[in-house]
Image (tube, rainbow, N blue to C red; front, side, top):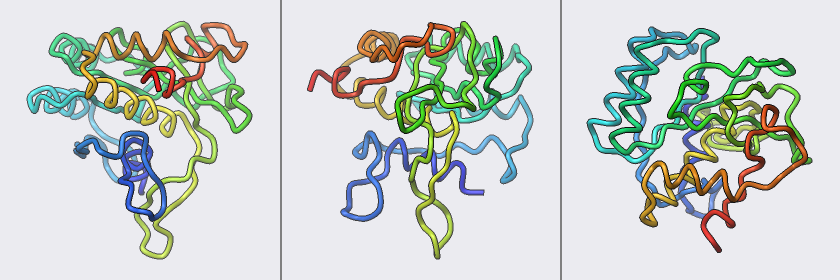
Length: 214
């Protein structure tokens, strides 16, 4: 409950002098529901959700979800999205410490796979690692929007929180004229080396100002 709302706020909460500001507050945000309120759903629904994003012509798809099993239809949907110009970003998973255990769809080709760091810019203990990992983003005690009227903001941890940092950054780059492949390359090329192997941290910790050259 509230997981999607929290991720949405990380990516794109508006700057209204209240609460939190997302990475890309001026982006238009669309919610595509593919799982139930308790986080379960059919693989076919995830693939259909990705296809829906592509049909709408939206720039970025954030997938803060995962499974230990590969799915051909989801993998094909991710590849099709990439070919059509959509930047697909996915959470690597919260099974750390582990070895070669990046979750799907993050482990599929043509998906930007995101791990999480802690408050010290170190690899978060829960963050899944493996050769498919592309980049890291903050994912520990991230305060964002929530669904409760009594508590409209909450702090969560996980690669689900890290992924929308990258999705928001990708949206900013694509608004500046980068295509999806160029945006992914720019984010990884400008990431900060935090002393981890590629398997542990991909290209390193995202540096959004460096990626935007500001």
